[in-house]
Image (cartoon, rainbow, N blue to C red):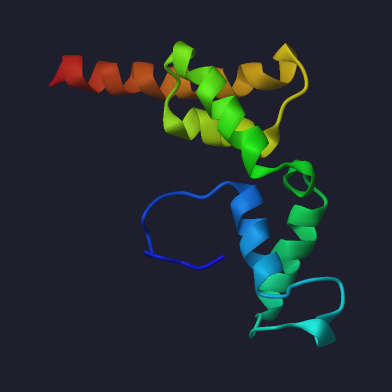
Length: 112
């Protein structure tokens, strides 16, 4: 994986994990292809324990495509991809927080 443009947008946890893997990050620090900072190893270890280690780019693209009919914000979809809730109970807080923020935003517009 090659970085084409820095700060071009947000990445899913899967994409960050894929970047570390392409740079040679793994359980064995002696098998590293490029220079990987100790903090990157910690992030790699964390991401290996999350759902990102089981995802593929095809799964993520299909999810985003399926969610287009719900008109969700990109940030909400990113949170759902990274968390990968397995029930409605787990997804409700993600949607609720975004709805709450949107309501606060509307209140500031109305008050101005």
